[in-house]
Image (cartoon, rainbow, N blue to C red):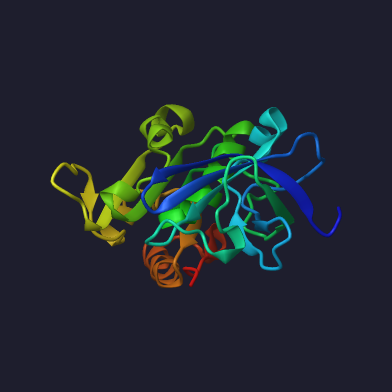
Length: 240
């Protein structure tokens, strides 16, 4: 692989006020990655590139020849100088893949999987869940997804069909501003919610979100008897 690929933005949409869904076209360029990995991106010619988890799965990319990201936008909608004024048709420099936040090679076919996301930490977990399904995983794939505001929920259509697609529950909880019409869970993910999914048998757990959240929930899973070798984590720090 060259130092950096130059890819074209197929689409840039705003699924929520605080996120952007960026889809890059491979257009036949050979690129291999594993579910859960990341890549660094920036506008073509920019010296700065920032890392983002890939939200698509390799099975998706093999079918539609594209790579997808879920990016956090600033209060003004900006994605930062490295992607300033990015738009459909723009060229993006792309480096990767990297990271070891992966499904095991010997994934047990019926083992329960538990994905726990905070904010845009949903991106690699979406990739992992979709790839597990593509690999023929038969066990339940559960999702716990925490957002600050009810308007921050990304991939709403996929969450609505999660049980049909993944054979497990998708629980969304709002920590700060649920709004008047919110009928789902409120507050942070904690022991009472984790207990519903902690087994037995103990699930294979994947956590991605802010460091404090990931550390707290790793400890709580341990309190519930989930072995340390069943827990895989990825942390992100909000960009300045």
